[in-house]
Image 1 (cartoon, rainbow, N blue to C red):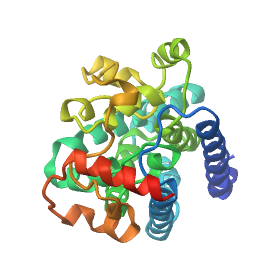
Image 2 (spheres, rainbow, N blue to C red; image 1 turned 180 degrees about the vertical axis):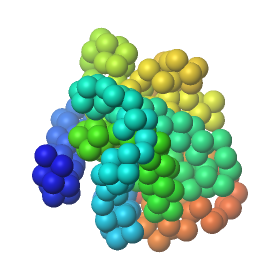
Image 3 (spheres, helix red, strand yellow; image 1 turned 30 degrees about the vertical axis):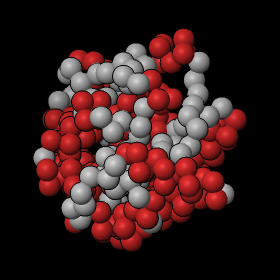
Amino acid sequence: MTEWIISNEPVIRLGFFAGIFGLMAIWEMLAARRELTTSKGRRWLGNLSLVFLDTLIVRLFFPTAALGMALMVKDLGWGVLNVVSVPNWAAVLISVVVLDLAIYLQHVMFHALPALWRLHRVHHADLDLDVTSGSRFHPIEIVLSMFIKLGVISLLGPPLLGVLIFEVVLNALAMFNHANARIPLPLDRVLRWIIVTPDMHRVHHSVEKPEHNTNFGFNLSCWDRVLGTYTDQPAKGHEGMTIGLKSFRERSWQSLPRLLAMPFCNPTESSLTSGREESRGEMGKK
């Protein structure tokens, strides 16, 4: 089983990524939650170029990544789950839950510490939210996140299956909850008691700081509720809210070179009004 997981991990992850991406993209076309304000072509080119670069860097510097660390930790007998005897199914479940909590806490930290926020704002500077936004992160943030994940794995000692399930679910739900997809409100109210829905996570991408400092979860919604960072709805509603940051609103910031440079730039805050006017002008040219 171990050899099978290690050998097939790239194919499994790529297969789930492609499948979920396709489903979310179709869903967005058939039942969009919000009207887009900027050119999808420009955004998708920048976002997907960043995804490709991030994947290349991770595979180059962390060839076996989280699974390799889990295997090494198991061989060395490190980690709580390699010391405390629990059934395998329980170890898998505990692994998924604890790793998800770690991702939530990491997300809070990237908002709280100025140096980390400079990296993370690349994710928040997207002017619209859709399936490509869920994987839009600066390469340095991806590398730091990987080191944090490897540290958690070394302390936890999770089974390989638990790590694989977590990685696949994290990737799939990140695309799901960033999607510009409409879910019937009664169903959304039920789902968000368990997982983070698009309407729940969209609040996190509001330009209003009190809103974008809430709803940090990616998978399980319980962490925001239990730890006091939950906001039910944006003050202006989902159609009326503005997505992104008050700075970096010019469409030129959506290109790959400028996304890579963004953490090292200190532009003055752009007017939201001028940003909207520029967006309308761009849409009018399409």
